[in-house]
Image (tube, rainbow, N blue to C red; front, top):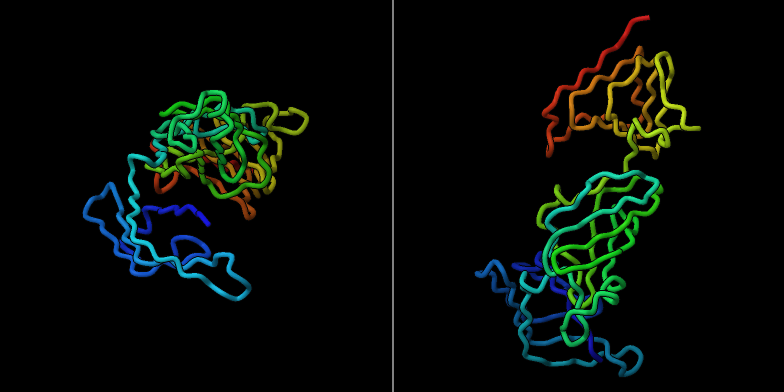
Length: 261
């Protein structure tokens, strides 16, 4: 019974179960070379089809090398924001992103598109083109807000390693200036009360009108430019009002003004 071993870089330097259903004994990790993780295997126990309640021992002497040269790598993603309605074309750049066939040869272009899977924050992104250094996909509609994750699975190579998690993070967020972000395409004006419900994310990309009540149960984030938010009351009710982050500080000028009655 043949099976494949996926050796993540995090396995280097520690003993652990490397494949579900199989136990490796006598494992010695060699980590002097940062680009490879060599693993010496003395024995592998695997439940082969030898009868109920029994296990056959398979003794091997082998070396498995985990090398960055053969691993898909993600470097950047653009654009890093797009509407929750989907339809945004996203370009993911990196290396070793072209899928391989069983012999280790690159797949033809028409087959390659169906052999790369991309998910952004848990939602599928439909792959439209593939090259060794670039994958292009189109986002679908987002449901609830999930943790930011970018996963790319390349057939014949495995899951891609993320070189820079910040540069490869995607956000499903709707712009304040987009009429389709608002119910009945009615954009807020002076004196209005605005509610951002749970599950909605709004990017404030222009100075707001002077609102009466700004109720935030979802996410409101300032775009990366000088902006002003004006309201009589701002109530963050279990939601988030974000002006930069620890990883990406807001370097522009944000002015939040509370106006009296």
